[in-house]
Image 1 (cartoon, rainbow, N blue to C red):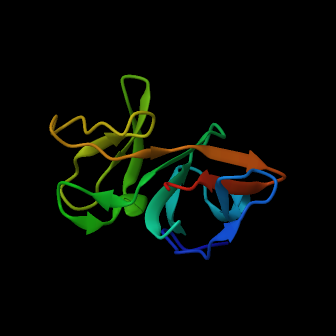
Image 2: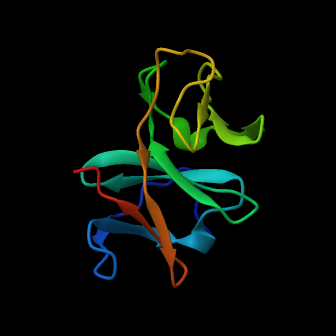
Length: 124
């Protein structure tokens, strides 16, 4: 088991060039996130209870803090979102758009799960 939002070491994913393995899928509890360092950038990786996995920037542009992996995962009109633990702005896990501050967004990163391992596309 991992702690919520635990930074995990990065490792090149040789089976998926351009991706970095971050952890075992089972290390992410359903409907929670963890933070990972991918290509020198903090990324928040979320596993939903329906099995989908998403990755967005860990940096909350509204508060200026690296906290999104610690946010509350939910749903807004069928779109999975995470609410920042600082000021509760919601960010779409599919688009990165902030639903509560239209001028703010975060980058979305491609995710692959293969053999029980989660790999995130390097932002480079």
